[in-house]
Length: 288
Image (cartoon, rainbow, N blue to C red):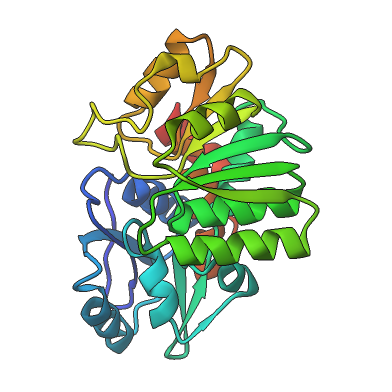
């Protein structure tokens, strides 16, 4: 594919670590070309240690906007000049728009995930979800699931730097939605197994199992899964994580994070360009 980079090309990009596996450049650059937009999308391997300097540089350069992925979503929330209501509720930013020199943080992850559930043919409204993780992606998914009408959320996290933020999120969900959210310490396998047993869907919203660490999984015991359980993973490289493979052996339906990536990216695309991403074209060119 040929791209015509000009002196007026608008730069957009992805900041995270690792990012070499990302298909976001394929998605966005294909969409830019399809619509004839003078934009380009690149990836940069950026950690939380270097994120502040990188963001300052991008702002000084006047870039159009950028995405943040793990592990940078929570720190980007603090670095943004202002944030959208959704990002404020979640406490994490995955999309930044440069508005006349002000970096406005948004979060499109939750919308992307809930759309991916529908795309996979599942209905979880009024049901119970167990989710692994309390970082930027996990909190976005939890917030949107609660707003959309998921009845109950069991959130499992280690007592890391995300714990206090997860406590605040759970309180906000319980106070402002009809969803009942509960935070559990991941250190208790018996509690995790109990909560999964009464759930319709289990979601891994951590980076455990992501390329190149294919053999990692937060759950190694196949007895944790039941045949009626849907198991999703926000990871898309590999396309089938170890968690998903174990769930399939137990008879579960599974899906990965490819369409979450597509749908959250479509919203970022709209925020940067004011145009709708040509989703059917992208599905045909990249996902099929």
